[in-house]
Length: 147
Image (cartoon, rainbow, N blue to C red; front, side, top):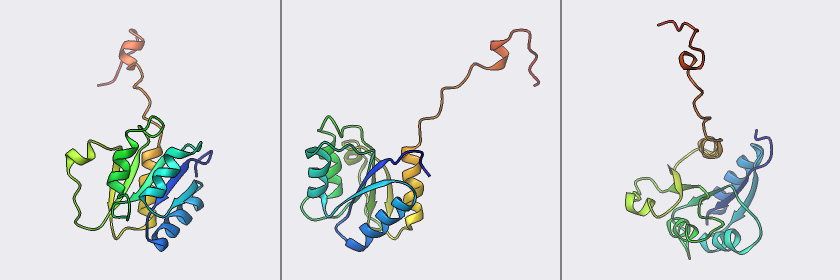
């Protein structure tokens, strides 16, 4: 459970999927806002004063697709570096050149479990690994290191 609630936007045009994801993420301690499609998600993310830590979005949605949404978010100062988790239909491939224009950091194919989504969210929001410490052999020249 996160120490403080990280803010996540879940965008999916299928109400039941959006509701299951939002419920599972909330029960895991996240602050979740829902969007019914890519256009609504874009408005929420770029139009208000709210800040978000992560976007979880479906690929195929009316108005603005998840891929289009993630591409547009790279153009906005506030959302330029916000990571995204893209949910796709089984077998749908996003080309590397398309991914390079987005902040999509992970993808899950349907069908998926809500637990898988939470695990991916935790990985995406985990703090960066700490910098390596000075090895003991160089920190103390008199210290013997076992081989």
